[in-house]
Amino acid sequence: MKIQLLTACILLAFASFGQEKREMKKSNITTCLLVEKAFVKKNGEPTDTKELYLRCSVQDYFIKICESDVTRKDLEEYLDRGIAVTMEIMEGEWDSCPDDKYQVQSRVGTYIIIKSIEK
Image (cartoon, rainbow, N blue to C red; front, side):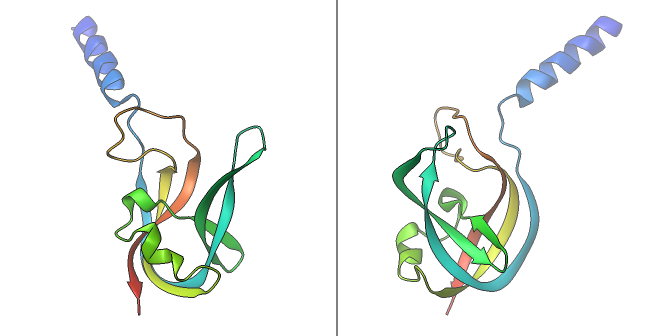
């Protein structure tokens, strides 16, 4: 009985290994400044890749485009301007997307997904 329980626990642990942990914190409509920042490698070296962030008060929130209901192109016309959005604040991996075929090493932390642009 103990061996079966231990085996079941091990199988459960392996089944959940590598799956992205996502947790929704809250959803709301807010107006913030849309900014673009250079992606910085783990060694601190900036790259030519640009990422979008919402600058809300004192914090910049990374926008995870692949989980958002809007595209980068939808957002770009608001770059360096205020934008009102319905968003969800999430906790999890920034760089992995649901449709990725391969697991990637990812930054982890608070990010947002944008559900809609409020006009």
